[in-house]
Amino acid sequence: MKTATKLWIGLLALVVLSPLGLILPAKLGAGSAWGEWSAEEIRKLVGYVPSGMSKLGEVWKAPMPDYAFRGQESAPVCTLSVSYIIAGMVGVAVVATLAILVGKILAGRENNEPS
Amino acid sequence: MHIPDGYLGPQTYTAAYAAAVPFWVIASRKLNKTLRSKQVPLLALSAAFCFVIMMFNVPIPGGTTGHAVGAVLVAMLLGPWAACIAVSLALIVQALVFGDGGITAIGANCLNMAVIMPFVGYGVYRLIAGRSDTLSRRRWIGAAVGGYVGLNAAALATGIEFGIQPALSHDAAGHALYAPYPLSIAVLAMAVEHLLLFGIIEAVVTGLVIAYIQKTDSSLLYHPAGRITSRGESK
Image 1 (spheres, rainbow over the protein chains, first blue to last red):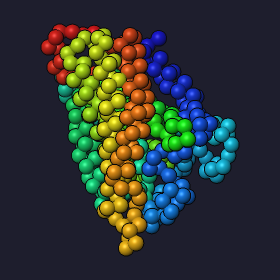
Image 2: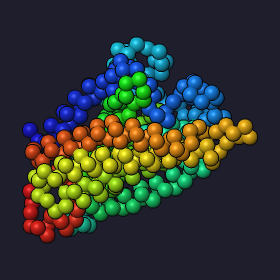
Image 3: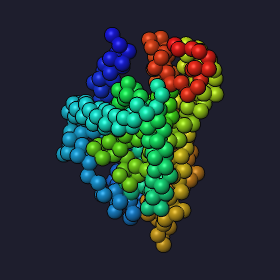
Image 4: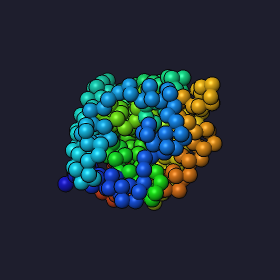
């Protein structure tokens, strides 16, 4: 098997294992990454929600926030894990497609270059 | 390390976009000259790998989480300019589709993880690997150390961007308008967690993948122009 094929298989295995990145922090009581708190968390930390933050924080509504479906904010970890894998599949497909498009455009002129 | 919307004021996120754009332009020009069609699948694989590895949040028990990025690994396969493009694509999709990192902060997040990280990490790798053989131990050791230093450089930059916010924008009562912690706290928090844990995760991921590639197909390792032909080596 070609190394590239093996690497793609390895990548898909990582997507299937990705809920570990959700389950382990939940089991070990780890919260948000530093500097990535919700408004509610920030109010607990510093006692207020910075005014610019509450305005700017709403500029974009992502279709799959936090690698889950909309409305799953309080879903159990096992449901979120399934969403996480789906989000991983969607993300890999979108990122790889974009990279192939960008790569094809950029590599398109190779005929002009000595190989 | 994905700065959300609302944590950076307009001066900072505009400046970060202004700093990132030239790198995107130069990276596109460089790849226009050097990227070959047969490398495009590897570019796609690299970008997708960075996307997925960032989903593996590693917990500090009772504390925060962090993750590896993979930018230095990509730089070792395709060069730092291609790594800039690959990681930027992953970060842009994370922000737009998954709300991981803000829209206004795409410039800053790309500057940290798609510019500073691959270039610093790749520089360290080159220093350690030198002109060693592609199968040499110095390659994977350089990869691990490069990953460690690269991620920490990105974390430091992120800490500085967070930390300058309260001084740049605050109201009459002294309340910050954006990220609330001062430079000393923001830099310390970002530095300590990445020096002690997340940097080590990045080192292990980068070193392991490079060691695997050395064993299976070392031709995948990036050769800066001139290096390979000057030695007449084609492994």
